[in-house]
Length: 196
Image (tube, rainbow, N blue to C red; front, side):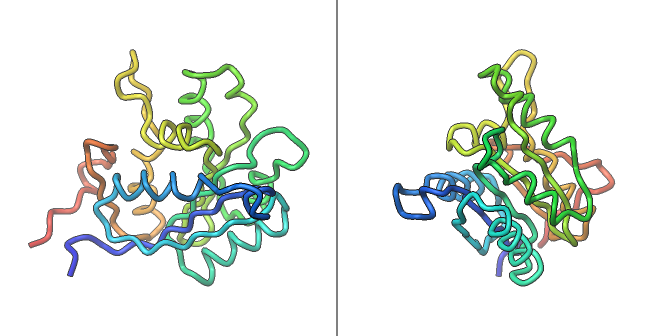
């Protein structure tokens, strides 16, 4: 029996070529690797690989939240301005609430590396009791966006620091992170005493 709440995470890679088997998907392994390092919670993974098609993306997101009962869903890929980049549009289509701060912060982190970060349309939304977040497509950018730039001057927080408290507020499990990877922030009144 774990001391930590179990967690269901959906990881969705959006790519025409990877979903067709033209090349190996790198988004899902990168997401799982980073999240496994960051979280103390036992995780049940729900991976999905879908093409850049609005209906297929919305169907995957609805299925992961409504049927698979994921607490968190991360997508990777399809967030730029190209005609086939429709992940944010599909994500907004399934939203009950939009969480604009996540997208703003993801672009802030990426701007430390490339001026084209302003072309990213990444969004985060709440559907029911799940948080859905669009992440970049490149493994390095996925880690930077989640973790932030702690050694940057001034430090730039990653988005994952806010994820556990957001999940608390929408009625999900209590997420606990390894501080050396990404220290979760909660107000003192929201911190749960260790079990045992």
